[in-house]
Image: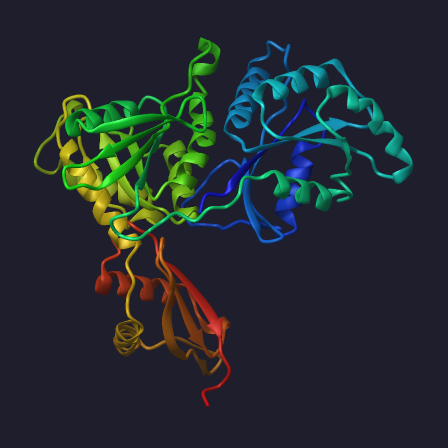
Length: 444
C-alpha cells in the first residue's frame, strides 16, 4: 500500500517545523528507532482517522535570496512540492501577508497540486480576522492554526485526509502482479545506467509512463520468464549551479521516499569507490522503515583493483556498516560494461518471493518449540517468559504475532535470537520480518 506524501512548505520562520514536531511528538506519528540508522528529521509517518501518510518537513522558501544555504533549502522545498500529493502552505498570521507569501503561492498554483492554506500563530479566536487577507492568494479558505498551542491541528489533518488519493492495495497473486522495482541511491552512483542496461538486455520495454515526479520515470519490462516489472528510476537531480552540487545528495532523500513507498523491492545502489556513506545509510533506513524487500547493488566494480579477497572484504564491510539490513543480498557489478547485470532480476525475484512467503501455523510452532528448547526464554525477577504460540499475520514483509504471558519479559536479545532462528529455518533472505508480541491471559 502506497502512503500519500504531504509537504509542509512556506517562507522561513512561519512555524512549519513547529507544526511538524507537534504532529510527530504527540505520537500521532509512527516513528521507529533502528540501531545504526542516522538520518535528518525531514519526514515522519502519520496515522490519522485510519489514514496513513508521510509528512515531509522542508526548509523555508526564500525566493529572492542568493545565500548558499537558503538557496539549498529552496531547492529542497521545490523537490518536496514536486513529489507531494498534498501541500500545506504555512503563513504567519501575526506578520500578515507578504510578497514572499505571494511568490510561494504562485509557485504552488503552478504545481497544480491540492494545497491547504494554514495561517499560523493565530493563538486566540479573536485573532481570526487576520486570516481574511490571505484569500488574496487564491488557494481556498485559509485555516487558522496555532502550531505552538496545538490549535487547529486536527482540522488540518482532517483536510489532508480528504485530499489524499485513495489508498490502494497492490494485487499480489502469483502470475498477476507486476513487481514494483525501485532503483534508489545517491546521485551519480549509476542508477540510470543500470536501468538502461536492464532494458537493453531484455529488449522488451512495453511503454514509458510519466512518473510521479519530474525526475522519476516508470518503465514496464517483461523478462524472458514472463515476469513483469515496473522499474521506478529515481534518476538524479538536475544540477542548477555549482553552488548546489556539494550538497545535492541531501535531496536524493526526498526523491527516494515516494519510490520506496511505491515499490515491492528496492535496489539500493552503492558506489564501489565510496563504500557506504551517511546518505546511503539514510536511504537504507527508509527501506527498512517501510518494510520493503531489498537488494544491495555495488556498482562500478570494474574500476576497483581486486584480488581474491576483495569482494568478501567489501561484503563484510557493507554488512558491518548496514547491520540493520544484513538480510539483503549484495551484488557486485558494472552497469557500464554489463558485468553481472544478468544476476539482478533473478535476485529481485528471490527477494520478492521471500517477502510474499506464508508459513503454515503448525510448522511455525514446531520451529518455535525447537528454538525455545535450544535456548530457554529469559527470566526476570524470578518470572520466566512463556511463549504460547505464534501465527503469521501478513506478508510483505512477513509479520508474525507471538502470544506471551508478559510482554515485559521479552528482551530485545531474545527477539533477535528468534528472528535469526526463523531466518535459519525459513530463509527470508532479501526481506525484513516483523515480530509483534501480544500478552495473553494464563493458559486455560
